[in-house]
Amino acid sequence: MTDNAPAGPPPAASTESSGSGPAAGAPYDAVVLAGGGARRLGGADKPGVQVGGRALLDRVLAACADAATTVVVADPRATARPVRWAREEPAGGGPVAALDAGLRRTTAEYAVVLSADLPFLGADTVHRLLAALRDGDADGAMLTDDDGRDQPLVAAYRTASLRRALADLATEHGGHTEHGGHTAHAQHTEHGGHAQHTEHGGHTAHAQHTEHGGLTGLPLRRLTGALRLTRLTDPLASFDCDTWEDIAHARARIREHGHVLNEWITAVKNELGIELDVDTRVLLDAARDVAHGVARPAAPLTTFLIGYAAAQGKGDAESVAEASAKVADLANRWEAEHGGGGSAPDAG
Image 1 (tube, rainbow, N blue to C red):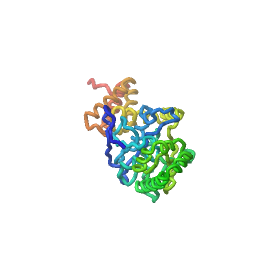
Image 2 (tube, rainbow, N blue to C red):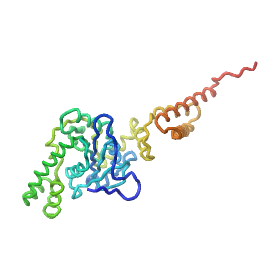
Image 3 (cartoon, rainbow, N blue to C red):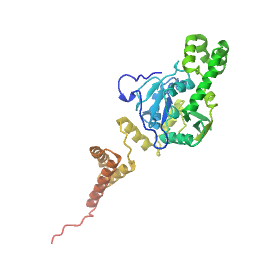
Image 4 (cartoon, rainbow, N blue to C red):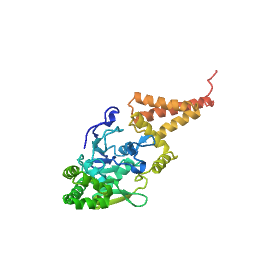
């Protein structure tokens, strides 16, 4: 594990986040697994792949932005918002070992566990998972994909239940490890080349057993199989990018008519470091009135001036709405004059 942030800009790649949790319910922590090998992408840096002008990892971090603490299990890199960093030892030890490493840095009662390749995950889905968990007595709430398959890396868990299951799994697997060759053979049978770490790296295996309970190479189903889970269906939010075909599909979808505006505005705000949430319909209405009542090129220049005026004031959404309303009224007056709507002065 490491708290080291990457050297140099941007400063957003600092080591820890602070948040207040969602408005409803107790605060939660987030663990994002971002250290996989991306073999189906030819070893590309999958968390850094851009979809809609934003890295996949940053898109996931935006979905859990109100977590009290966000832990990313991967080598440190620049991110759009501050996070904490952790790493399973040895690196590349698989999702169970990575989850264990990340969970060690959390303290909240609930933990949202996410992979770093979910382009369509939003805060609404994260809160929906947390609500389902808080309202029931299950150990976790996870999404299923469009084929009904469990997605344990798009889920919310009770951290106590998750820690207990990890400890039981570590004890079980660690006990086998102590018996030497038998375990190496069994691990090779189930997980292939992972056995090489046990057979040829005795010191590594011992250190791993001591700190992480020998969780390397275990599949997530070994962990989730011991938990009582609630399942929610959300094929879009659970869509993950394993192949370049998936990446192409995600890039194409956000350019569709019903999505492109919000995606673009979000990307621009991220690029400019703006966290302001505004009613884009108000701005669009003002731009439409200006384009129709004055001149088409005046519309983009006017929206710039609206933003500038709002920044000169309180700089909040209400300031944008107030400036937009003034501009819309001015555009209507301008159009009325052009159309001869005003009366001639009295010549008497």
